[in-house]
Image (cartoon, rainbow, N blue to C red; front, side):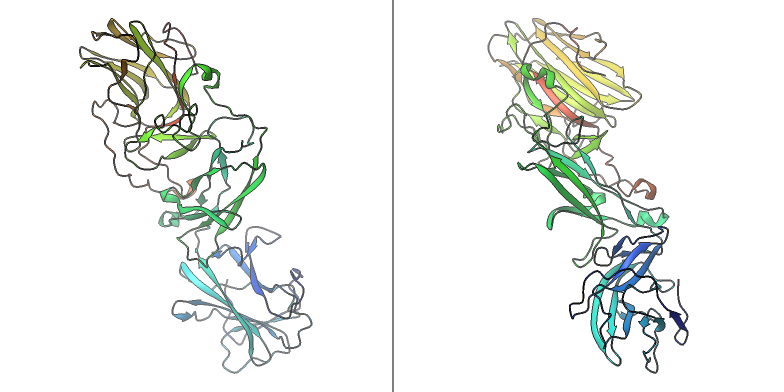
Length: 517
C-alpha cells in the first residue's frame, strides 16, 4: 500500500489506543508494531523483536513511553534508507494539527489527534526490492528534530517467511517428554514459505538459552538441528530459536520460537534392548555420543568415526539416532565373541530404520594366527534387508522384504562358528529365517583366541560391495521445496540407528527370537 505524494493531507482523530508500554521517563523511545495483515486483532511483535518484514506485514510506529504531556513534541517522521541513502517516496510524518510543514516537504503528512497509543500503518514503497534496509524514526519538534533512532529491517517481498515450531526428540521412545538429568535431546526447527521464491533463500538459525548462544548455522548445513544436554538441576529450561531468511548481521533480529523442556529425576531411562541389559557385552543407546552405555568412560569401547569427523544425528519417528552411510561409517576395534569349548559366536542387535540402499553393518572374525576369516554384512537393497555371510570357501545371502510402513525394525543376527562350519541367522519377533551355513575349517580354541580380524563397522560401503568404504565428502544438500519447510534431508544416509547391542552370551539355538521386524 502506498500514499500519494506530498500535498495530500490525511486526518485521523485517533487510530485506537494501543496503550503506552512505559511511563514517561523524559527520553524518547520509539519502535513499530509488526503484524500480519491476515491476522485479525492483536499485534504479533515489534521491530525490537524482529527485523523481518514483507508484503504481508503491516507496520504501525509508536512511542514506547508516554509523551502526552510533552509540550515540545509535534510528531514522528518515518522513512526507509538503503546503503546509498534515503529511498525516495518512503517518508511519512505523523503530526499534530498544530504542526506546520516546511516548504519543500517531500513526506506524506498524516495528521493525528494524539501522539500516544500508536500511529496508522506505515506504507512500504511500491516495487521495493528484497534486501536489507534501515528504518529511520525522527521525533519532531516545532522546528527541529528532537531525537533520531535507526532500526535494521529485512524486506522479504512476497516470500511470507515463517518459522516452524521447535520439536524435541529423545534418543529412545518414551511415554512422556520428561528428560532425565544428563540426557542429550535433539531440538529441531525449520522455516517455510508459500512462495516459489523460497528456493532462492538459505535460512539461518541461532539457538539461545537466555542470552547465551548455544548453536547456529544455515538450515541447509544442519543448523536447524542441534543436541542439547540437560544439566543436573531439575525444572523447566527454555530454549529459543531465532530464524532468518539470510545469514544475519549482528544488529538484525529474526523470527523467534521457544520450547520449554522439563528436566525431571523421576523420568526413567528406557531403551529398546533394556530387557536384555544383563546379558549384553556392548550397548550403544546413542545419547548424543558414541560411548558404550555399559562402559561410558571407556574410550576403547567407544565407536570411532572412520572419516575422523563428527557424528551425524537425525530425527526419525519421534526419536533421533545415528546416521550411517558411505560418508558416515563407525568402527569398533574391540569386540571378542563369547567362546565355549570349540564354539564361538554371538548375537548382534540393531534397532534401525533403513533409509536407502547401502551397508548397515559389517564384521570380519578370525581365529588367532589363522588366515581364514568369517565375514558378516547386513545391508539394504531394492526394498529388502539382506544378510551376507562369507568364508574363504563360499558366500551366501539371505534376502527378506522390509515392512511396507518403512519404520524402525529390530534386525537381530545370531552367528556361530564351530568345527567345519560357520552359520548365521536373521531373527525377528515372529519368525526365524533359515540360517546360512558355510564351510569353515579354522579351529576355535578355548580362551579369547577368536576375535575381530580387522574391525567391526556400522555403515560404509554401497549395497552389495565387497570393498571397504572410504570416507567421502558430504554431498550437496537436495534442492529445497518451499512447502516442505526449507529443510532438506541428507541424501547420503543408508540408515538411522537408534540402538546397537552385542550379547555376551553364546546363542544356544537360532530359534531364539527378539524384537519386531
